[in-house]
Length: 169
Image 1 (cartoon, rainbow, N blue to C red):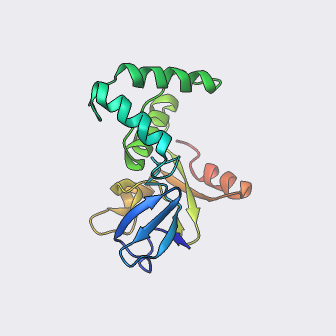
Image 2 (image 1 turned 90 degrees about the vertical axis):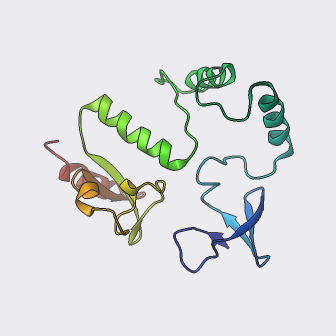
């Protein structure tokens, strides 16, 4: 059974995770489709990952606020794997990364418009910052909607329509 923080039917209190699964306070197991909010691509409690993280953090510290030798090495490796990539930037969570992607795309293109994937009657998860949280208290819809157009996953016609709606930007 999937677990999603946006669904009120699912519990909000988790006690542990292993692999791709999480356990709630009542002992029920769920598949974590949010993958630790996007930062957990290898799952929870992978012994090899835990050992490597412990070794790296003992040398430099677990989380520094600026680049380190290891982060530069990783960035260079990632850039080398992706044709056309010229740089890499790291974030701590989905909100940070999607916000940075939005800013980088606007800086690179000079355009304000952003395409956003619709998932049923809501949007696909893009992080928890207010820019993605339409309909939530304190979020002004016009701030989000003015320069956004939505499309449906795997529906090229909906992508075309979304692009047309942003013409002139």
